[in-house]
Image 1 (cartoon, rainbow, N blue to C red):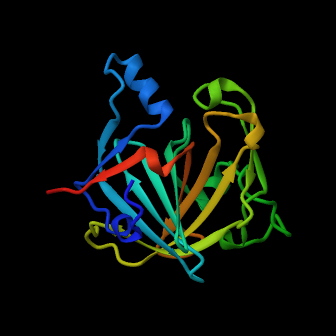
Image 2: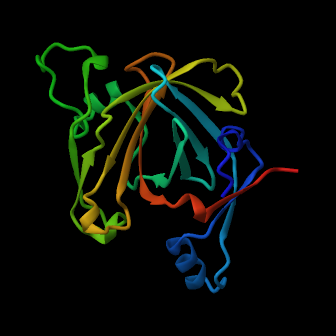
Length: 217
């Protein structure tokens, strides 16, 4: 892996990412593709910068429903390979309230009268789903940084869409559990705080040495 932060800050559509981690190689072997790394083309990149300069992210869209989250804090890089959570439809806070699908939010002080931006994310989430850790009940705990807020932009830029604002909330399982799907991320973004679309992503960390980038020629 190229440890140059500028390389990862400059990732763009058309570049190729190759994954040589154990789970990717096992997948290749099950599909009779040998022990070769999985190569995926970058489709789009969501670039997010925390408002108090605590860090930045690149949400890199690969195949449909699959993402690599590259997180940069000071000189440190961390990678999480994510996918759209099963049985989850990206929705606004209003839509979630209307559907009474509120497991991710703390109850407001006055449930009968509140503004959508007032809702805050819970400290832990239980998931039981056949597509997440093979139906094993999984408890995800919010990471120490809690909710973070960022400015966000698409690369390449989408026509008619300017500055976006995002809330990013990361969760992890207990390390001792050794689960495959050990990471969960809420990515909420839109033109105004509290009115964006909430995406739910789940997946696993990958070691930076198992990810390589080939720039588009």
